[in-house]
Length: 65
Image (cartoon, rainbow, N blue to C red; front, side):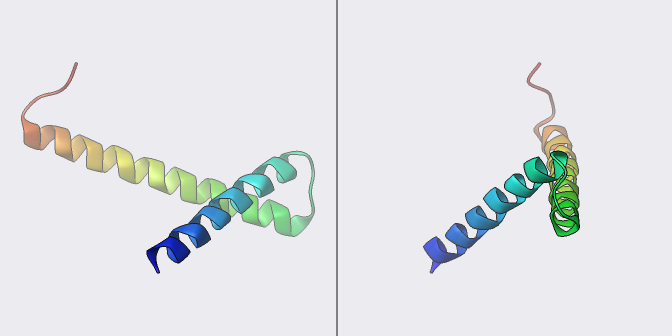
């Protein structure tokens, strides 16, 4: 069951990336909508990863610099 879920997530990610490239080349409207949603999801994940990373660094009591 886990393999099926991960496969579906992989298909969605690859499809989103294809839509981003296609939209950059002037694809149809639905491709631009999917590309915008993909970019928004990527930005959201980026922000969430940064905030969780900074809270983890604070818990360790130092930085890796």
